[in-house]
Image (tube, rainbow, N blue to C red; front, side, top):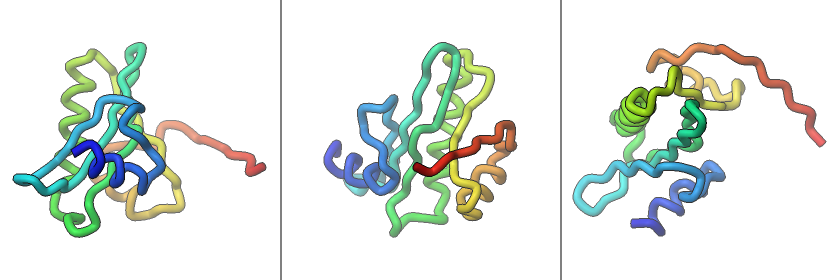
Length: 110
């Protein structure tokens, strides 16, 4: 399973070593994978990716709900995710789950 999860995470540039890995699967089929980082009272979604054949079926939502549960149990006051504002689908997905814009990040391309 690690190889399949690693391959799916590579689609968003993440690795299994960046935090707690959550896997959604049905029998032996990998549906999605997420990485949650808990550190010093902060919780962050490092990666969330679903198999292209299983998108729009609630897999990502279930992974986010599980990450939220784990963050609450760890005593974290919020769960943060950093995404590109140019990806309207991803922004809409997280807003639909109750995430709000709370920070502004500015990048200087080098």
